[in-house]
Image 1: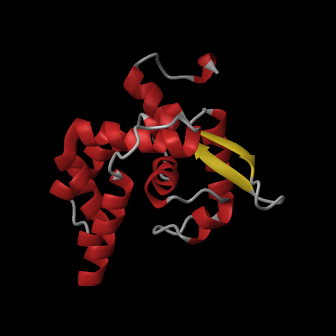
Image 2: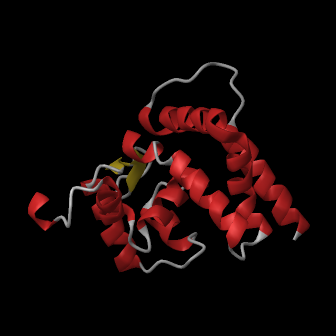
Amino acid sequence: MAASLRSGCPINLSVEVLGDAWSLLVIRDVMFGGRRHFRELLTRSEEGIASNILADRLRKLVANELLSTAPDPTHRQRRLYSLTERSIRLVPVLATLGAWGSDFLPVTPELSVRARILADGGPEMWDSFMGELREQHLGVPRPAGAPSVAQALDDAYRAEVGRV
């Protein structure tokens, strides 16, 4: 793989893994939308990803250890996709990217409310959210009684959708 890389620059290498039009959106949908199966990712994508593109991105994300896959214990023909530590540690990047988009691009209120809350919550909220994701996707327990960032983000989204 090293021979095909343009340089050893960390920004270049990150863009080579995440810089296509769909990879971060697939991670976003698993991370913020709780979509864990191919069909959910295909049919509930805001942007309308094609099935062949989704299959390709899922393969690449698994190969780059940003997602893991396992048989779904509830349905033998389905695969369950999970975030890995590598993708969970993208929370600050996605929060910052979402805040930038909210500040400078023509976003819709319902689709930007989560980004704004995460940006305003800062590193402390990002760490809490990463703890929730580790619990959900990696089985790492988080402190009992900790408030759910994911629930707060979902509640804010639902409230904003109700206003539209």
